Structure formats: structure tokens, C-alpha cells
Length: 100
Image (tube, rainbow, N blue to C red; front, side, top):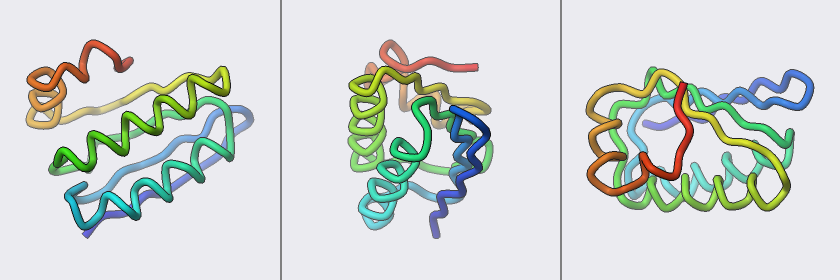
């Protein structure tokens, strides 16, 4: 199961990711990410409850980042679990993302 929960506060959309961002969930994630980018120019992803990310999830994150940057906004990832951070580091995503 995967959930995307949005909370807009001014020009920041705080998005909480819950569950497993696997191949099945990637399509729903892309829709949720597109909605998040449209709701506010700056997006903060809370990954404290994200248990797993597959390559399809990485592609969805890459697309989200591209959409946000193209619109002059920022993307920040918070509370990234160690296993997820390891995936970001192994794939090179850690170099292109901003973490808090």
C-alpha cells in the first residue's frame, strides 16, 4: 500500500509518503506528485514512513524534481530512512536532491 498526503501552507506543499513506492504504486505517485507540484511552487517530501522505493519510484521523483525546478520552485526531502538513502546514494540521486 502507498499513500501521498498533501498539506499546503502558503507556497510550500508538505507531502507525506507512506508505504512502498514500488512499480504498482509509481503511477499513483506520479499523479500525486503532479498534483503536489501544481498546488505550490515548493515541495517538501516527508519520507519518514516510506519503507521502500523501486526504480519506477525514482523515475517519479526525478520527474517531480524536473517539474518543480522548471517552475522555479524547490524540492526538499526530509526524514529519509537509511535504506532509502542508500538507494539514493547508489543510484546517484543523492547528488541531485536536497535533504534536511
